[in-house]
Amino acid sequence: MKRIMPVFLIILLFCCTGCQKEKLTVSDFMFNTYVSITVYGEENAQTAREALKLGHEYEQIFSRTIPDSDLSLLNSQKYLNQANNDLYDLISTGLYYCELTDGALDISIEPLTSLWNVTAENPAVPSGPDIQSALSRVNYKNIFLSNDGSISLENDASIDLGAIAKGYIADKIRQFLVENGVSNGIINLGGNVLCIGSKPDGSDYHIAIQNPQDTQGTILTLHVDGMSVVTSGTYERYFISDDKLYHHIIDSKTGYPAESGLCSVTILSEDSVTGDCLSTACLVMGKEDALALLNSLDNVYGILIDDKMQIYYSDGASDFLEK
Ligand code: ADP
Ligand code: MG
Image (cartoon, rainbow, N blue to C red; front, top):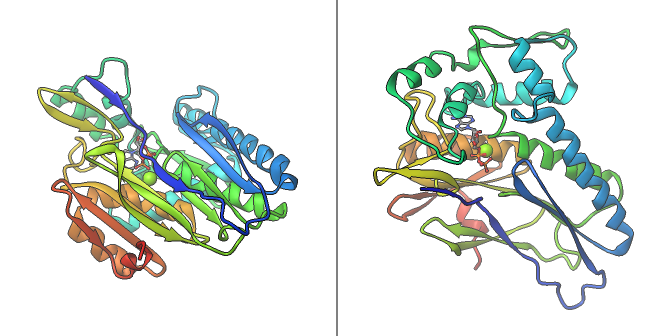
């Protein structure tokens, strides 16, 4: 049985009394997920539509499934001379977090994500030898960035930016909106929520985290202003075989879906690429290592939910809860 259920953070956008400006939301489907941008005031509507187009442009760079994307070219040729700047930047950021998380985030995971292909029509558990063979190609240390702008992949490495691209793109969309005069709004890239300022009346956005056991319901609500909120979950994309759940976040040490005891990790941070890298990594790392890492970082907060629905907060994270 297969089920695809995008993690979603529900944005509670009540248009407040005293809020003069009309709320406008534009939306589209890209990166295999639902994307929406909300701004306030008719004068910002065109900017929001242009920002959506920007999303498509980034998809053409970072997708591993679009055959002629920049990433697909890199993966097939194992080398790009003068690589696209955004591809270079995102891989560079990714490698920083691969190192920081000791490979819990590993952007060279592609041989394993393709092998598992959990969102396929009829997914199945791969054979042990196939997993070992894919695993032997996974190691972010096989990715090399040169100062001349080229990227090379050694030892048949191949990159998957699925864990981090949406965060990068959300940040770029926010930058575009702000540069074009938008001072309040919210961007939602299928589970990556990024606020621009607060609501026009100065109040916080209310962002609800999905209940992992009842994905129609929510488990808690956060109050945020100008921040990114990103959730990774094991209940998002998965299949079940012989009563066992196989989800889409792979442990690069075992080659199997991570079994860290966590089923949901939400990261609050200034920018969304940070949250995207860390939410995926923390889900692989498990509660103790994840909390230790988050507590060592400035301006980053995490909310972890384990398989028994226990909720854990990194230092300061509970300050964002609805009072
Ligand atoms: P989503 O993008 O589905 O909201 P994540 O940000 O957690 O959720 O990213 C999950 C995706 O990242 C997977 O679908 C896969 O493409 C990729 N991935 C899976 N495991 C890892 C890993 N250990 N390190 C890096 N990328 C991973
Ligand atoms: Mg992620």
